Image (cartoon, rainbow, N blue to C red; front, side):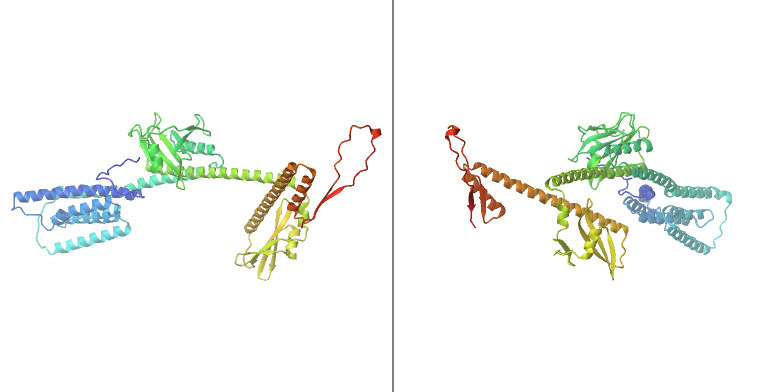
Length: 571
């Protein structure tokens, strides 16, 4: 079963598809939580100091925004970033940096040294927002600087200061601002090249998996397994790989591994049991990729080799059906990165789809072989039941049976064969004829060089007729011929069985008769039932007993008796 873990205050509650956004959200979560703690602590000390000495003034209006509003904004940044609302959290964080710059500049006034503080919101916007957001933030900062300049112009107070006295303060402000700008750019924008490099590795790995998927063997499942396991070991550099396959009951009951020292053959072994806490059972149950390391419990990693350090389990799922679990293990690295997990999952998906295709192909081949064997048996039976020339005699007869297709889809029996269709039947070739605004296609129905019939289709003249459509029509005609042949064979077989049954019943009844008259009466009755006769007549030679023991010289020859007819005139 999946382990239930409680997220820590620093963990995100949602998962981002874009790893850059995920890193930014995680950084905002940590910054929001840290600044909330600092702001609440600072506010607490101010209140304690004011309670101890009520004569001490509270923060002035210029510093009040960061003192009172800062903790609230920090808490809002923490909550929104943790819940995945990255755009809202980014806007709140840039607003907070603007308040911080206003607070610091408002405390000392607008000077050349502290103007650099206004670059902090722009650096934050450059790491979090797109171009439009960066431009908007820059415009806001320019407006704030202009407002400060106008307000400072109204102050005619003369100040005298020595540059040596302000160098330390100016240095601290400049260095602190540069450090903050660098940290913001590093945290929010510095991950983009790393993620781009990971994405490039993803693309290369996925291209290799795609090329591998195109070369998979779809005829032999064992060969397919060998290809997949060899790819995981040779191309993806994993020291060991195996597959656990599920049986008809849906449970993992077979293990497939490469034969030691080989890359093209596998060995299969029954899987006896798996612990309830095993990661293999968990991956098969939740149908989700899992990482396994040496830090996990022994029961969870019972499938590990003694030298394995980390591994991954990838479920093989196709059309909501679990086919198995792919297990890969590594001896050198301690953790499988996300990009490689994506590659492994793609490999597992390719293997699952190809395994399903192989099994469907094997099932179809078995069905086709059985159908061919059945058809061959029927053909042999047909040759035994027929004397060879009946098909030609029936076809050259005057009786024609067919169907016309009405506009509403109904079949209308037809007993005539138009001359145009007879010409197509005699030619044994496809005919395409234009008739005004229509195009007529006539296609013979043949089987083994014997013409069974002809099909006729009418299409609008402006509709194109492609080679693919013609080939499809021929395939349909071939399937129809095969279906007619199978139907005729089945009918003949049933008729022959019925004849054999009647003959067997007649023979049984004749055998049960105890004298000649009874035999003849049974025969007459059976002729009447079988043929529907209204008048039956049987003529037989009279029964002559064997000669006596008297000497031949003393016996006079008896004249031969005339045949006696047995007639039944029942009507």
